[in-house]
Length: 309
View (cartoon, rainbow, N blue to C red):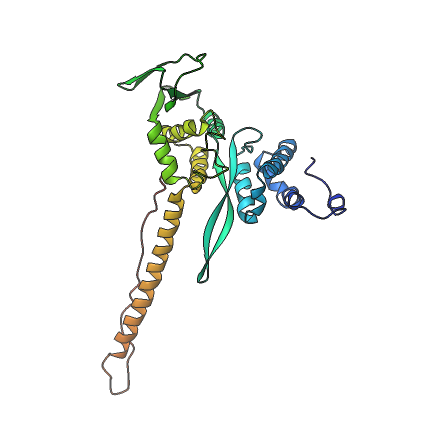
């Protein structure tokens, strides 16, 4: 369906959630989406159409807090990636969250951008990688990893290679040489279960029913491998956005709020101490004098470290 229906055409019937989303995307957000795709209007149109398709396949996206939904898709556009229904490059996942409003906790459904394996591969190639090899290792495969050398000779036509037991990635760099990463099933799933808020959810790509070829395994290993390649700002940004799906992001936000609360507490404490100090100064014949000297100024210094999944 054409996402650029005019307001007049849509007003002929009652606005559906799909109509409302389409109007927002094709209206106030269209120019920015087009800019993200380097002025390619046709690609921007395909992007908007694919968003509507994604929302129809996962109706819970319509229940998401609208700002979080739009921000998730705009992040995708900023990275020049397409929703998973089109390319497998990125996802927007709905999840339930608890948010404190005043003195009460309220349940809210939010949308979260999640980078797909193919999207990460796309960004690696854009950054100059020459070749990426990512494979799942099964129990009956002929596989060895010794002294940093990977040897894998699977019977790809076998109908029974056993259960998946791990994965590896080899990235050949544009500057020459290569880097690699090997991880076991336990290492991969431990990272997913420990850090991913969408792990175990109905719509999560971590569910093997949704990801029978285990692309999320490959993506996890490739993200770890990204730490070994020369730094690239776009890849770093994509991984940082993807890590917002992580409970690490919640921990960092909580730490930030605690830090802000500590700073405010220090300010109040120092303010009270200074008031007492001023009130206790010796009285002169002409009356009370102001406390002399500069006021104490508490400082909170620190660096937040973003830990990748």
